[in-house]
Image (cartoon, rainbow, N blue to C red):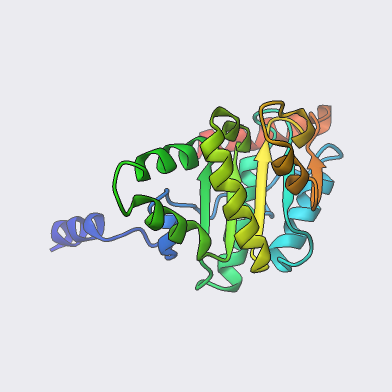
Length: 211
């Protein structure tokens, strides 16, 4: 009986994410929250504005977070998502990597109804979170599609949060009209952490490894 129950549990869908718009991406776990985000002088403003958006999506739109890899940008996107779903599990949210958005668009162009399905997916949601938006620089058609999606969502007062490794103004292959949209809301940098913050992160990682 125990073995059978375990097998049934493995077959069952993940209980960690009930939102259908997130399930096809991957499971977001409770690990990524604002409470366990290591805060320091280098990232406290980024955390504060992300928390404000999670509690009041009209606080600033769009929100653009940038900084080098490994500084916590993805953690903050996950934290926003988990906070929003805690408050309202019925919210339609999409978290997507910039490269994945591009790949999905290319794939959609291979079928007759693909582009319509793609647009309906991204333009009928409440919140769009795009990680590594710099990948949009790879194609003009992708930029065109994102520009139109961006306009549609903001016109409907839907929240958009993006991350990048550099400031919007330092994305040379990005169209000026997109850059203009990105800086039209709030742009916040995450700087390299100081010694105390790095030490806290190392201690947290060491504790996680032991668990």
